[in-house]
Length: 460
Ligand code: AMP
Ligand code: ZN
Image (cartoon, rainbow, N blue to C red):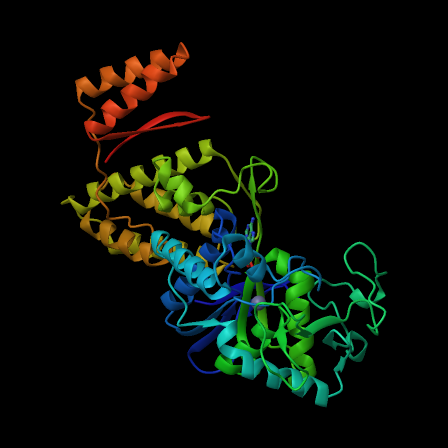
């Protein structure tokens, strides 16, 4: 069956075929590992996971690289401010490498919790300093870069177009809020490839231009070129990467190799929280662990992401997560009914379901439609093992452990009474008694958690 993906480059849904043989080469922009990844970040990687699984399901082999940014991403996405890694290292009183190792591990732990299939190649910027330097040298040799007292800059005026993904010629924009005016820059939108390090800078490497560190964009051009070649099939990332990071990756690759590096550019829309932005100041930057701490499964969040198409914004609320957790439980209960079923179902019906599901995922990863097929299958009154097998097959795409047995925790009467007493104490603002009862419940093996949405209980 044909596969269609929406391509940000052409702004149309196009038929997908790999550039070479049966192997699809993909590059995904990975995390900047200076802090915990949020559930917003994870929306983009759940999309990446679905893409991987869909291509595999269609019989393709994958060669997929994802970078880990452990140097060079400055506080502003322009070339301003401190390096995010260095800033975090100073704040946490650790070395940048320690910070990177700590958050990389946590990031990949979240992948495991969400059943996100890992790319074949996971590559760190700091392991590719030499190659990046060679890439910068190539751009200088080709006349696309120039040196100033502070950096090596990319000269955007040398390109035929700059802004091909965004659909606007960025060079015609006036420098203003987004771009600071540096006297030495030839054009306001020129961006840093290689930055000369101030004396006290923590991360810096010897180079023909003195002690330097890389700009943010050069790592992705260098590593994609190294692992996947000058041109590969698909490039992915979050939608925010379009106007800066990805335009600059295209600029760099055109300057070095004369080519746009990827044929398809696929972008995931943002996650909103209660209809607004996720921000530290609003206290709503939730992590996967925060959801688990409130008694939800990480996979309930994956289910929530499946309620909207990856190119649409998704609104996170605790109520929506609760619904997704309930939905996940119902799916698994439904699966068990079929797994234990003894009735026969027509093979034609199974084929029909399979086709409907495949048509949905091959239509630009239309998971909401694919999920409606899953529900239709679950609800089939004929309880048959063949249906259970089909659901296991669908789970190759979804990765939600559909065959997991839902444990219903029976709360003993004694615990229920303690909980009621505690609720009463809280209503009367008797915090001392409430804490005492919480400890008592803990001793009996039950963890009580309070939040704005109410109290939950978990078995320890
Ligand atoms: P970062 O670690 O900030 O470089 O981001 C890692 C990835 O997560 C990038 O592809 C971002 O575009 C993506 N991302 C960041 N915030 C969100 C969000 N709220 N919703 C979806 N994707 C996001
Ligand atoms: Zn990137």
